[in-house]
Image (cartoon, rainbow, N blue to C red; front, side, top):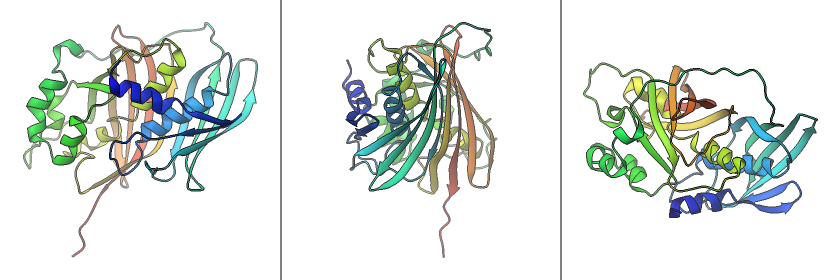
Length: 292
């Protein structure tokens, strides 16, 4: 198993302090704040560990304060309801005595029912796209230092973007790119077979690149120094079983950006075209101004 995936599983393996109280830690990757996907994934792990006989099907979360990567995060789970088919949990993440994140999650007993799904976009398969080494060689020399440092780091999630031009600086006055982005994702190593682990790994990955899609038409990136970007809320719906260690297509679009906020949504497909998850997120995308 890849070292980064081992670290991801260790990050998601929370310490139980009490029946509904858990503690998580952040990996030492040098970030100034905790990655939002980490908090989503850990919060879902905390909720999962208080539910039996049901699988997560949706979560809705708000980011309240930046997380401190040097301090542990305590997750308090409120078991709101356990019904015959559904269970509901509320999770609050706490650091330094303050809530930094809150989430509601719903779980359902697996059952059969009506079935339809949106078609997967027609994009090249991951094997036809540049791998990590080729991406580094082709794109990283053109990236700003912050973006380069991110892509140089060993990560638990492998990315194979379809629209590589997204990462190439554009000339002033160039025609704007559409607010769409497609990227194949998977963990860089094999995961255990338990479905809830794959759910939590996807929750972690679902925060990656989504907010940035709202900046594509403006030729900007969250890595630029004059951009202040942060996830404000996040919603994830899990439709069908899947494996997060197999290729998934994350199709993203941003219908709107206004008021220093960008709104993005995503659809996640298996490579054989099954829609397994949907995502929506609004985030802060503020252009910093220099005061004279």
